[in-house]
Image (cartoon, rainbow, N blue to C red; front, side):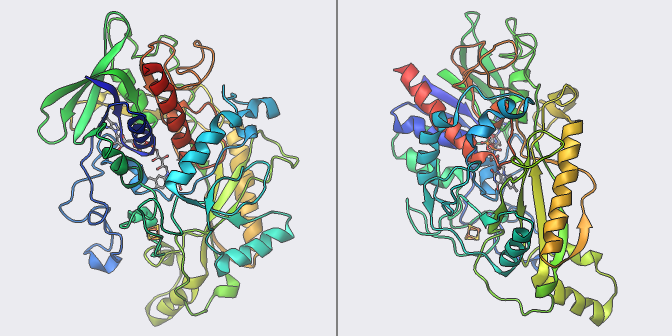
Length: 512
Ligand SMILES: Cc1cc2nc3c(=O)[nH]c(=O)nc-3n(C[C@H](O)[C@H](O)[C@H](O)COP(=O)(O)OP(=O)(O)OC[C@H]3O[C@@H](n4cnc5c(N)ncnc54)[C@H](O)[C@@H]3O)c2cc1C
Ligand code: SF4
């Protein structure tokens, strides 16, 4: 019998597995998707004209992976993420104390800071030491320089009293920890084929395999966490992705790490005499407090760059960021927003459809605007509300015969106010930078799924405690974005990894 079985091999499960194995704990990771060779599986450097319909698929033809939310592949979404990596600040952990809305975390920044340090070192986060109150600095590799468009927007934002900083990414800018530096191909969300960008297999699980303590069972879709009449979990039952053959792994501790919605779904599928509403759901809180980030989007052309010669200006997808600046300004809502910008990349020219004309004139209009295109993507913090939750749709089953997870989402008044203000500021910053606005998103779009198995001290209003252990079952943990009591406006994955490293210490100590 293993000490621990973890369901899910993404940023959360992969970090947890490596930290446990290094502590001498025997771990099996159950992953619904196949093993993926990051060197050869992706179309990292393909171009649209390599494919008949001009659309670049994620995987090379004939290579399995990313079939569904339950079978992405070993590494999960960390294989395709954009790697923007922020620490949450003390204000993020205690938002309710500041503006009376939402929920506080039961932990403080100081509880997570040593784990942010460790994870940043392992992962390799590039960035600048900016000294900002609401965006704590960390252990950084050298940052990537601003590009022309970043410098123009930085100057424009400055006119409005808004600061622009260099982006922080889990991407190596110098070689280390067995990984090479980035070669600036700019295709990070197509899967980095040299693992300069963090993915949980190459950076965490692969090195941990050498401990002899880690086993990865890929192509194994978990369908139930098993619980004994004595109220202890005993293991996980699963189905083979291809053959549907059934299997089970027994362990002293079970960790659910399937990425927010699927973690909630797996617990809801694990009904028993003790837990008829789903495992660890005696409070009825499982699935509640679903708080994904919401994004807006403004597309524009920087007029100073229209008609310029495109250059091979070493970079990835984005190099700059507008940290939250509203916390200290008068505003009509709780919480705040931050802005990522520039996803300029030779492969994505969908905006060309919005340019008028045809023939040679059209082509030269598109070419002239190519170096000038920018997208401003603000991210806002959603507050929990009773209409936003996750449940199972028992009428819809997936290819494994398992009920589909269902998202219910209703934007609240506060969310709509943030959305309006962040769209307004994105347009103002772009205008101050001399931009021609092409389009402004009319509605918020959900992003970065968070909440559903909230962390808290009170078992009546939360699902897990401050160590990610469920209130109901002593040897059952949930470790991923579902435990976030509040979302902040910052990309969440670095925090998930730090939480996983912290939970690993707690689990290893309790097993001893
Ligand atoms: C295109 C893109 C860009 C992104 N950019 C950023 C960014 O810049 N910064 C940031 O912070 N975040 C970003 N994210 C989000 C980030 O990828 C996620 O927050 C992170 O990967 C979540 O980690 P996880 O381990 O919780 O889940 P995942 O990485 O999704 O891993 C969960 C794994 O569990 C497996 N699984 C699910 N259900 C089952 C089951 N029943 N049985 C077995 N296995 C199961 C899945 O196959 C999957 O491999 C981005 C995401 C995408 C898609
Ligand atoms: S830009 Fe760098 S991190 Fe991104 S895919 Fe290319 S080599 Fe990897």
